[in-house]
Image 1 (tube, rainbow, N blue to C red):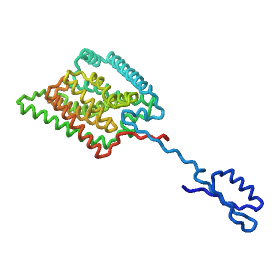
Image 2 (image 1 turned 90 degrees about the vertical axis):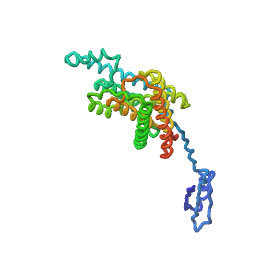
Image 3 (image 1 turned 45 degrees about the vertical axis):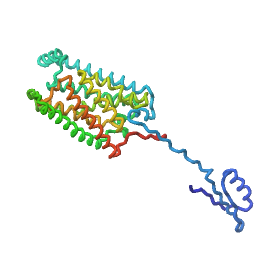
Image 4 (image 1 turned 135 degrees about the vertical axis):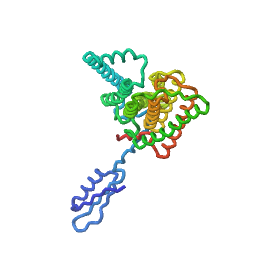
Length: 360
């Protein structure tokens, strides 16, 4: 450490007074009075390291993905709960407004009114092969994402980007890599499923190709990625981080949102097991890789492939259950994806935690 020094020229008659002042100003300093030359003396005052305040060491804290609410300087334990209330209120208000607008339009235009009556009468059976029904379902789910972001900004819990990853934004290069992994793994799983059916001698049930094939494929490409992302931001982003605000161990943040995710899918037992395992894997990957990229990638690729095959009549997109073979292949596909993604995250040094210093 450099030691600051002061070099003065003083009159002989003033030396005692200045030396006393120097002792008072620098009690722990080192000073000397060299021999005079003429009537002037040289006074050198050097402050020791004890006079220079030592800056306090910077303290840092590490926050895993599920604990990112606590990384904000304005953290309050109740803010995540308030975000949920505000988001629910905004979503309900938008839904009611859209419904009222549709009712008014249906009263004015007879064709719209006939379609609206038919849609209401068939609510018990939602047909995802119908373009209008498909778009309505996808948009109702997609709306969850902007509502959640707006609620987060209104409440002011932390930067909205922390819903995506520990870096404060979606890591697009890593996301693209995860999409590639998911495409290869899921395609392999589907080929294995068809291969097992062929080897077992079971006939492949093929439904008629959707008469609106081109339109449906466009809707799938445009809407499904946002639908899958919205679900991940809600269940693996907001809910995981909300639980992680209050409970430190990641197992709670991963497991507690799973029942809600299962209830959001109207499936039978085998289908619920499949959805539950997916939810656990997606939550664990979000914690393990420090972001939603892997979970979103798997969700998007899986849904796009299933819906696309459904439009060609190879898969029933309205099915509510699975088979033992189908469940086994799905679980194996998920497991392979998890292993490959974790290894890739090691290879590319993907950040798992957010480091925050006390000066932030």
